[in-house]
Image (tube, rainbow, N blue to C red; front, side):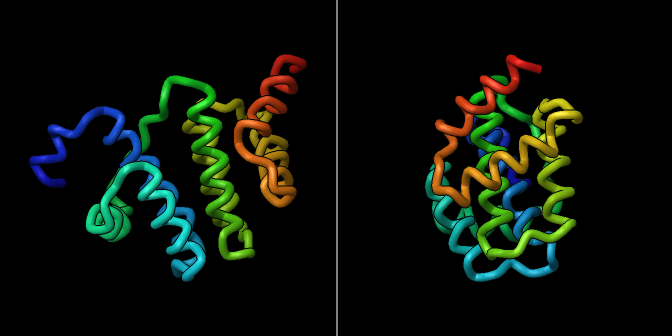
Length: 145
């Protein structure tokens, strides 16, 4: 870690850690496929990173920890992005699902709700629904638990 990273805004630090989780999902099957790499670059730009920062984050992915955002909506959005990453290459393997489940747990989602939550998000993504729509569905189901 560079000494300059100590001066990053807290949101930028949080975005870096989140981005690294996306990289770990992409690397779960041992290779980052082209579709996954393109997704990572799109997400990196969305999070405000430059191309050199994205490359550095991908190269250094193994050494990062995760500090989830406080807001449930932000945690859900990040989980949605993680699930999108698992779907980027069209193949979802067991390791990717374990990483996505672990990410959901670290994000504060209840262990008992994670399997159904991941399935709901996967189905929603395949149907072309965005994270805001799925978050509304999640909030309604969460209240009924």
